Image 1 (spheres, rainbow over the protein chains, first blue to last red):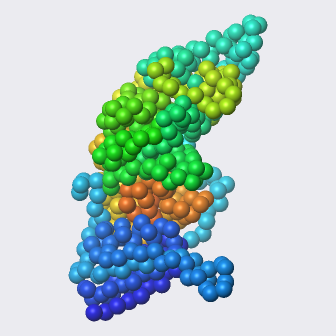
Image 2: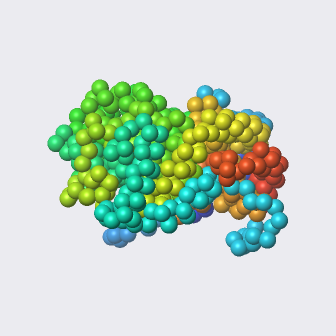
Image 3: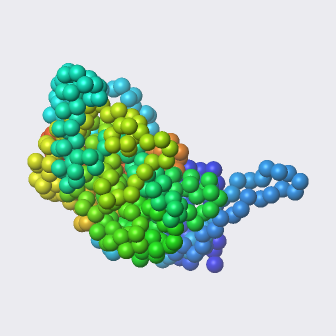
Length: 102
Length: 398
């Protein structure tokens, strides 16, 4: 199974979702895409993208700050890691009115 | 994309205000405000003729608004703005309930004044359970079964539920929420800042907060409604102003302008709501045809004048600027349009797309007399603006 990593740390919305969608567009069905993001909107927007474009969000996890030995301030800020499974033939039709779908 | 200068008002095309939350006041209210500056300038507490005249005008304004809300005039206080009134409503209920506990319950889509106060009190006491946020569904409507459990927890002294959400328009089930609170002896604080003037006044509350802007009145006037039956008291020494509910004197002219706006809006509310609803329905259908759009909020059980949607692969700030260039003033809940760079807590709680967000709130008829034509032009221009922003981000064929 093909695996891709999209490192969108430091990028602001909507760029993390655009980078994810670009990777998904050219990937065969079943591809696992791991996305790393620091943007606060990614927590909401990557799950929303999966719902809207019919891909599977397999995992969303907070990666804690990495503590460096003997150093009080952490070396890296915390970030989010998403694992998305590319579904076959993502529909590219007009958007859905979610309010009528429920 | 080049940022267009804010000062460029030479464009011949008329400006179209689609952000009623910050609309100018109705022309009749403005005329009243100016006239009242002459007639009601005096301190209403003074005993001489000018003071008594100002007192009479202030009483008149209070009576108009109390009648409109179905309460008695002494139950209505004027505070300097809706959020201030809401905060006072919360603190007074909390303090009055201090012998029973200190726990607050609020929906996750309440005004930030409520959420920040709740988090603050819980953090001060180092006791996270003192504040419970009740989740909402994809439409933004409160989960009543979670609310019922939350208000049943011992020590709960306030539940805050809005009449309708200002950002997405979804109405909340106040009657059921009030019944649940009543069963547990928990007072219900209702934020009516989004709905008053558009929907009928709420009938189910123990304390109510409102803002004159929502019915076409001036900025800077909030209403705090504390019915006689409700136990409510602010901590500290009791103010002498507005039935002891604030220490800020109301500006008589502003209160009169708010009352005049209320008269105007109430006389035409049903017709205006029908007109707004028809325009929103047409716009909703057109927006839903755009590629990759999340139209958010309830389509039916909602305020008549609100439509919110989020577009994939669109930068909310760039789209707002592009629409502004075309003459349209719209709101947005996207992170890039907020000073904190955090997305709207309402969109986040609903689990909808937060980037590329556009929020349309139709102004009242006196402010937007040509809305039907204006929305036709918006429906033509929006897809062009969206395509331009997506192309700029290299996201045209995703």
